[in-house]
Image (cartoon, rainbow, N blue to C red):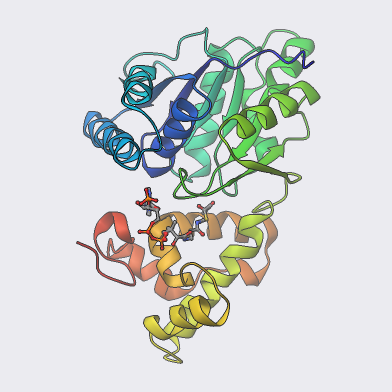
Length: 305
Ligand code: CAA
């Protein structure tokens, strides 16, 4: 019998494609109450619209019943603000886990963890969905309190819980303990990942963890093959779909992840390691400059309606 404290209430910060996907699996599979925080009311209303349409599709496909849909709708509420009280409502201090899913920009994430570390009791797990940023740095930022014991407890509840896009479809979470993370936090985070119906892998806090240490050089190499005129985007992607049985090629995948996110991840990996295999290609940077950041912008390596 597990003696782990149950997770009943989750706050998610960031209502983009990852935040909304995490809200969906939390509410539908883990059946927890979710407050999804975002400073932009229009981002929140698009996220809630997508949430309702995902649930309607589940009912139409007989994956859930009408009463499951009603229950799942009642479990998620949207809250304007960044959750830290800087704008809008603060995260309630009775939540069990906060999952941060804001843009992959180190200063933004460190600033949020610093604020949340001071705001929430050290029994609240502070998790990041970061793809690349050091969890140990986030834990150090969150470590807060008058005594060294309090600071240690405050840092020990920080962990990486890394979901994959599209979250409802992808069957994995990577769990990344910081150097400071307690065993109890690790076990509770793994239990939550499984409750979201995901397989769990564990990585040490190393740049890019498992997935992005391997995926980002592949995406970057694919962009460089395109940039050098070796092959068209379609032929690069077809090679991976049919030659390697990947569900989508690396350029279509970059469009799905978001080219801005790919660039941010590659910058973090390059800064952390100094390794040239993580140096973002010029074409990737130029496309982000142009605002052609993939599916969410209607244009990336391909065009979308
Ligand atoms: N959001 C939500 N649901 C989506 C979606 C999206 N962006 N894209 C597709 N889906 C859903 C579809 O609606 C469909 O759902 P139903 O079963 O209810 O009909 C289901 O996924 C299958 O979609 P399709 O039939 O249209 O297409 P498909 O079979 O080709 O699957 C795919 C689409 C799931 C995206 C598939 O191509 C795939 O698995 N691609 C690889 C995705 C991947 O590698 N993700 C990891 C990215 S790395 C990351 O996220 C981490 C990071 O740190 C960068």
